[in-house]
Length: 192
Image 1 (cartoon, one colour):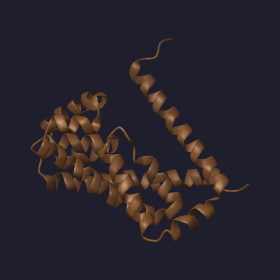
Image 2 (image 1 turned 120 degrees about the vertical axis):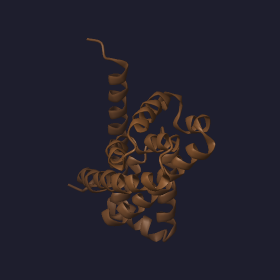
Image 3 (image 1 turned 90 degrees about the horizontal axis):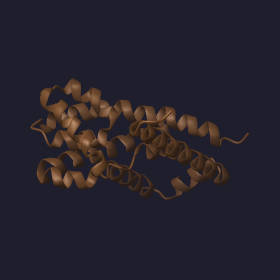
């Protein structure tokens, strides 16, 4: 049985994420969750600032994924603080993507998302041109907020409509990663 290239990519991505979380869980278990949280608290205001910047950058450079950082944030900062920090990062990162596309165009956006994601970007643009509703943007944004943000920037959709959809979709996406993802990660790092 031959796997299609899309299925192979999905399986590779799932494998990569699983390995990343396994390594992360082992590292946190070795360091100790309490020690890692204490280290974050000792850094004061720098830890949240760096966290927001890293998460926003991971959304701007689209092949990277901020979702892993959201999960780690929930474990290190606490779920409620991590939700707020991740939410701010998501608004900053995705808004930056929108304005990069809007002001600098397709060629520059392509550099940030990578050539492999260009086909996906084109599909989003085609769907967005036929439907300018906020509801439609809310539905598709959780699929890939970073790439969709670049795509919307290449259309004539107003930033305010984009921002409304981003605010709603970010709430859904980040809640899942921070509250569910970090809870699962904590199950693996708790001492037995």
